[in-house]
Image (cartoon, rainbow over all chains, first blue to last red; front, side, top):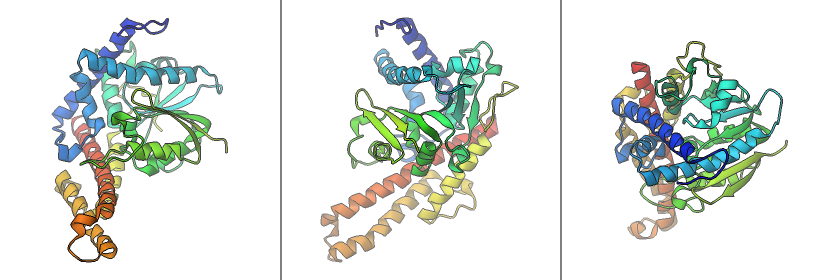
Length: 246
Length: 112
């Protein structure tokens, strides 16, 4: 892959994907040590399980595909976080998969980064604190962790200015959880969902052996009364949704 | 909400993670008619089998009402079967996600 920009170049691509591989290796080791059941019966086509295998065994071509999956949402998120919406920084909620996206905020505290309390966060924290981790002082990272129950009980309603969630994580949740995530956005807040069109099933409901919830979750966001949702179908799909004013 | 760690250990809380998933699994078990007095006595296979049987049984009154008990349901009930299959898939998907997460949470608790 060749990149030509002032902020991202070929070295950034390699560094990002090497970091992603290191993160995935830890997750892969943990799921292996835990003897996680990876039979088709137990996990079907569940990307939250398969992601560690994808990353660790990635070919150069697959690295480029994954970088593309990461880079486009990163561009949108980076642009959005540059906007000064409120003093004290933005309240951001992210899934727990490691990305370079929050590095500056976690070191400086410029924006208030929160992660959902999930296994991917455990993998990320283990990675951050390892010798291969990306931070010089991992003991003093500035972020917070939110439990699912805190989202579900409404105590965070209207709190976040931005939520970043990939489909492969969101589809693990119930509709109730997704709706409560929307409730936890402040008016004008952004919901950014990447990986929204894997297998191109966003626009119809296929009937195969296993569930492919892409369409259901895409429709949930597109039809949500509190959101103005923009679905970009290029690549493997990106949804940028705005929380409507009350 | 847990804020910045002061000891560098991390903020992931496997106990809260586990509790959330077991609550969700208990709801799924209720739908499938499983007793969840002891999660450890169940396997993912038990959940999958129960979910499939539950939704198979649930489809019978519907297909009978729509097409009569004429023995031809297997050929003509595409609509109800597809609907039933979709619901079964949704429930199974959630069960599998919760079961996987529960397994990993327990492993983290046991292994740190």
